[in-house]
Length: 249
Image (cartoon, rainbow, N blue to C red; front, side, top):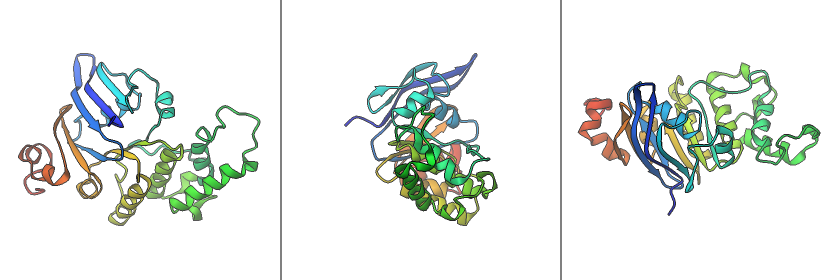
């Protein structure tokens, strides 16, 4: 079976400094895959390479068997990969509803249209309302997005990320800065919206990682030192020493 996402000997250098050092990953369709590691390990850089924000120095990245490592971010997105960011990225001066509707536009065929009156597009607006319901943001529909709570803004960003119908979703620290109750809600939301899709996430909260991921890869100094099911990662001595610590095991 063709992997949904495959990285082969991916390397990234900035000048003389090598940040990503020969990463190999093969993520099957439908898998929830977490990447963990200490700060500065190269996790977000890896996301930037996969999503086309940075060019690879060498190696290849494939989406559903087709190379994407030489494509710009918008082309990668149109081929079925979407990502969120560490720093919340929404349209803060638009309403919650308008944010979600914007996320749906390209996938619904509107593209660069300047003559459609969006308020009259019944199917588009109904799809936006349905997604708001799924995100539990219906009550915030007409609120300017910048006034949402932090956790609600993260939920909205996840909604924008999935709105285009991408089959491969990248989430960069989706629960960072959340309380325990907010994290619990975010985990259930991610589990729901990633159902039937391929999920790759960077996350520091180990309860989130071990509660969501089918497979966990540990990145240290730009290299994958282990990749296995959560229970084996938890018991791996090299992982304990490099990241989790003996008490976490």
